[in-house]
Length: 193
Image 1 (cartoon, one colour):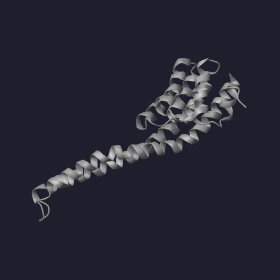
Image 2 (cartoon, helix red, strand yellow; image 1 turned 90 degrees about the horizontal axis):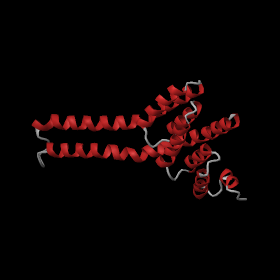
Image 3 (tube, one colour; image 1 turned 90 degrees about the vertical axis):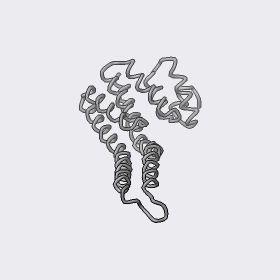
Image 4 (cartoon, one colour; image 1 turned 180 degrees about the horizontal axis):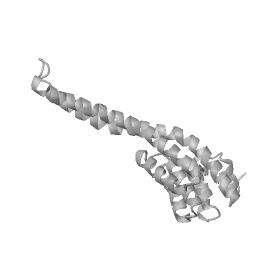
């Protein structure tokens, strides 16, 4: 168990570094999805407030102002979510290192709610469940990583490591190798040179 824990932590550290970058990429794709409806609403409000070539109708200026305030607020909140998620994730990591897996689970859950595409909160959940000796939840967290980012070889590698000698681990290692043909650990686990 000691060696397994050390390997889990090392792989976890590697994934945490990658996930910091990945979380930003994920949010760069999510931000337009959050901002576009607000921008469209602001456009509709602005178009409705226009009187034509003469300019803005004075009666509708407050409506235009409200629409713009809402649009700015939505953009500000969508920009803060990744930052809040990273803070919650860092706090979850601190709790896990301090030996408090229950608190780590709570904070990782908060981080996931703020950034559902990030792997780090799921990694922390899996490691916390491992510390609590809750095997089914541990595997569930690591399996969820492969659902959240199915094309991420690190997610599959973590799941394969968690499976250990379970026959399903070979399928996970094959997926790691499919996504990253040069992965030395996957090659070794599959008996390839």
